[in-house]
Each structure stands twice: as structure tokens, then as C-alpha cells.
Amino acid sequence: MKKSFTGELLSGHKQNALEVPFDPAEEWHIQAQALWPGRRGFRVKAHVRGHAFESSIVPRQKRFYLLIDREVVESTGLFVGEQIRVTIEPAR
Image 1 (tube, one colour):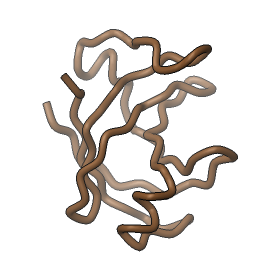
Image 2 (cartoon, helix red, strand yellow):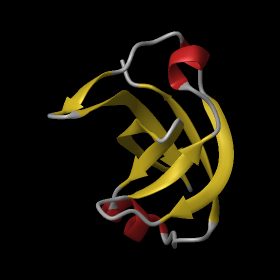
Image 3 (cartoon, rainbow, N blue to C red):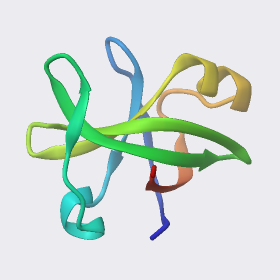
Image 4 (cartoon, one colour):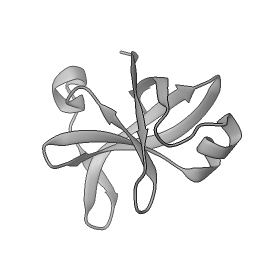
């Protein structure tokens, strides 16, 4: 069930993100769950530049975004605007 794709690292007001080119509910046949108060989404395991991390995919304006926290950005040398390749799978 792993999916890989390339996208532009986007700046967010709380976390950076990468647009996910599919709906996780349709692709993986899973339901969104409560992530924190007021936010539902999909928990995932992700890999970028050999760095594994856990994150979430959240819906926003009929699109889906993989949240990428500052620690991952700094430890992998990513920068906003860069095209990055990521592999994700549902967290179990």
C-alpha cells in the first residue's frame, strides 16, 4: 500500500506540507480519524531522503496535504519550494 510521489514543499503557517495527489480514503480504503481537537485526517508513515517519520495527511479545500514538521525539514536539508520525492503508507 506504499505510494511514492514528487511534489513541491509548501510553507504553512504552522507546518510545512506537501500536496498529496490522491484521496487517502479512496486509495487505501481507510477512514479519516481524529488527529487533534477540530482536525481529522489520516495517520501515515513517511520516508524522504532516507529519513523515516510519522505524520498526518489532512484535507484542506478539497485537497490533501502531508504535514512535514520543522525537525524533518532541518534534518534532511529540505527547503520550501523544492521538489521532493516522498513515500507514504497508512500507519497501523
